[in-house]
Image 1 (cartoon, rainbow, N blue to C red):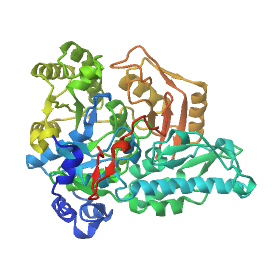
Image 2 (image 1 turned 180 degrees about the horizontal axis):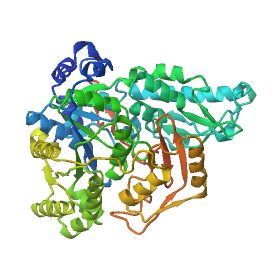
Image 3 (image 1 turned 90 degrees about the horizontal axis):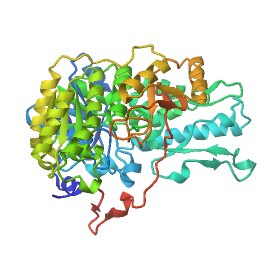
Image 4 (image 1 turned 30 degrees about the vertical axis):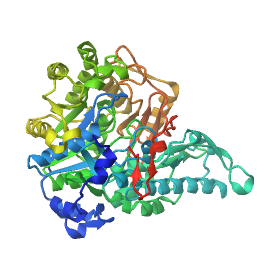
Length: 556
């Protein structure tokens, strides 16, 4: 089979004007970025405000393994499959970060014959949104240091600064830095950090803002430090929030591309899943829900992270209601949770599969905790056996899945996802009791403990002394009932990446709580999370080049 890059480069794409017209986007609402990309004017929401909303389907997955699960491939293929059965559908995805593209993860456009295109443009630079986030973020960092340098009229305590700088590259050397060296003329020396752009609070702000005025208000609320008296210092205090909003104005418009089979796709915002809230923008969801009968969206990492945050943060802030969930697994990944070595995953092992089902069962229960129908999608590999598929179907149904479907779209495109599409349509017609895990107004501790016990399976929560101080400070600042965004490893249902499959008998340690006041949530720190990834020994960029005709080779 050809590589994903070869398939994408050989595809015949529709002009973006045709994709827009088929979706119901009027010519004046489309801003073209070349022949195959565009941005959508926010005026479209005013035109469509009185129209009905479509069905919202959220794609999630089991705990990630080296074997891979294929969540984006499934989201794309479900969109193609719904198109095949004649449904008006639109896909909403996050924008890929170039850090993981050049590092180890690769791109974020799907795979095989279930991709969004143009593949290279989506994964590299796209329409400039990541660059805008980076510029606005670093302008705030510069304004903060300039305020301290020029007499420090706001009485900012340099030791209290929490606002880092940002770069869309995996670079562990920048995690902890010292800035302001070189003498008095070059600034005030202090320790500083860099985070990757996807971990910037401004990326979360972009994803959660409802319109331009809301974006402006959120920019102003960003907390960057404290005064010597302990009062928060915001971007508004630094008089930089207006300029940051100007930088972000065009980035607020969602980006339009297409699947390999011509269905419309909105790709917008890209917050990380193990630190931020792991979902595309609320604006993209709202536009899609007005244009399509079925909207497919995807949450980062597994159901204990992106899906939980989609339900408790995105749907709460955006006033969205999901109709069904698709839970992605593979035979190989399930056996990996059952203890099979990576090189042996192609061999039938029903015992390991049964052990690994504990992880899948936990994620089915998480979906059910939010009152949604659950369709389990088995992303097909050639080494899968009939006995293995039958065992997953049996055990997943016993665990509470509504339907279990084999998805063959990686090799067959939308044709291979017709069964999945039909199962999702049926699930969307079922009654559901979708709601957040905790009611509006729940305290930070009530939210943390509900997520720890009901989602992760912890026996309880242990708050370190710093966390207790932080929670009191959040209360004092008026943040005591904001939604919580859990920052923890994606490699385990717990806080500890070494606790595999379905951990039990553990307590969740919370070491700190920090505000993301612009985003509108507080971040709860569990374990040693890094906001700036590092490069491995053989990162993806080593295989990427340009051939003699100017064509990219080896991207994925």
